[in-house]
Image (cartoon, rainbow, N blue to C red; front, side, top):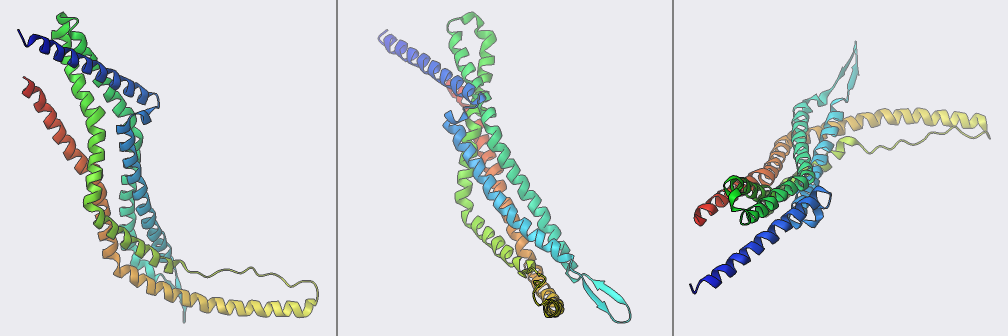
Length: 306
């Protein structure tokens, strides 16, 4: 009998905690559904993490697309020859397998960026629904003390609501943030090395772009028309000659740069696959493993209380 006051005090403390937790979950849940997800620090952190992944993957996508665009342009260069007949060749078509590989990898990286952006947008409503379910379940179980006759019917529903709320409203955003955080620290060195390799190759791609600037050619002014026109025509002929020799020189540079891309094809593929693997590890594998572990731990809690 001496433990009765302590037992009643502990019970009232539990009821107050249930009430506050349920009301807080409902408040944050409805706030998120009405566009106030920044009130929930768990959602804000998870959304920021998803946005960081989207930005990083977009940066990699742009580098890959730069390489892809230059390779595609280089393949269209034609070298003509005229002896008995005429013929034109596209010697840089040898880059097509490398170009196709870069394009496919860029598409995968774009899917990663899209998934990260979708996670950043979709986390708030999903988590908010989970918090509403959690709050309703907690307050429902509290109400069972006031109406014990409904316990047999409503208790399973309330338990399901609490389990769903804990999983969707808390476990998903927390495990997503924790998985990405652990993945970033575990794979930072590999990620930086792969990005640096792609950036270096993307800079080499500028060789294929060419830096020749086109100068505007203007007709001479009205004064001294005769000599001015003859001088202008002479400049144009000289310009055509320089343009022809420049075209051959540029083609030579394209051929030399093409050999660089052929040599770096393995590096491009390896660095791209490393980046895709790291993004997959950070966004999917680690968060899923942590989430499944959290759910397994959550399922053991009722048994311990039994």
